[in-house]
Length: 210
Image (cartoon, helix red, strand yellow):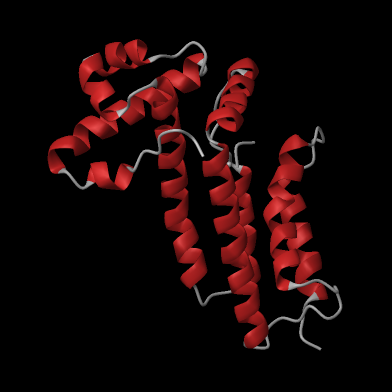
């Protein structure tokens, strides 16, 4: 699962603010994603992206100075899209356990889950750990912080208690955050949705106010 300080950090938001660059940047990133997903990190390169996108290598290099930088941009774009959902989760006043369940299910769908080749997927996961570790760690921290904030809010509103489970809000947030990792590395044929639903049900019953 690819649930993730490099030398260069791409700021996509800055690029996308410029209308003249938006369509070109999107096309480069979309094509790069397809190339990486089909061929893997080791085989894909900027020349391949240039050929498939119909955009010159010079133009691509102006925005992405190396394959590593381009790969990081693909990963960062995925996290930015996921964080739109995370922002909605953090601001929500709706059912905490239902929305946390949905967040965990979304976390089960890693960036490379749709890659059909296991070899390509393994290569991409390795590249992610090699070149995007800081992005992954920042994303994981952000997710844990948002879950913890929701837990603390539930406690303050007397909708949840941690007395019986003997966990801090931070510890419970970390447990819920790491649930998708356990699902992904398991060789069991158990339905992931059922597993997460049962996990959430246990914690929900155990944290009902006294």
